[in-house]
Length: 200
Image 1 (spheres, rainbow, N blue to C red):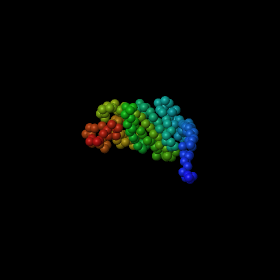
Image 2: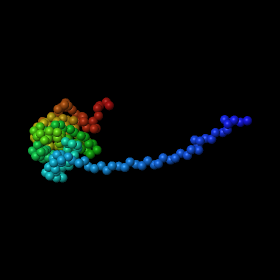
Image 3: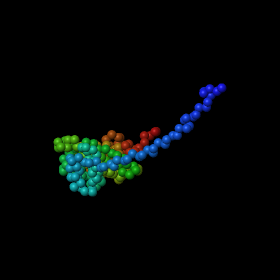
Image 4: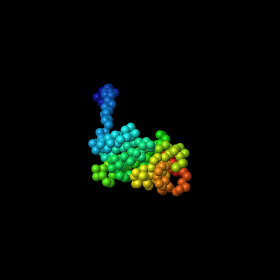
């Protein structure tokens, strides 16, 4: 006599039909609108564009900061206008950016004002680019830009550092000597992307 326990048990798992999950709908992409420039930053931007037109490209970076890109032929005139027409009176820092894919080195000036209270929080970023040599001979190749030393005294040591670290020679700078590296440095400028520490 067979008990109920001897009866075959139906495999309910195999009988359950898996319901296919609905295809995941791709999330709708939000259209990115260009950042709206606050009124104060826009007033600065408008003055620059009115003066230089298509010689400059002005971008809103964030509140209290706009960026002006221009070529090396116009960098001196733009810097002079920034000082005399917009009351920016000193350069806070100068940075170099190596762009080997573009065969260019970018130099970026961060400019502020001590004398105009309305600009106390404002930083104006002014950038330009120099030709990048594959086999640089700093000071004796085409990697050159006009110096802004006669406009902003505070760039003196910053431009010297960019010269030795990136190989950008500044025409018109009163003292293009190296600042940190030995005068007999014979390797690539050490902040270029193709510089390699020997033995690594």
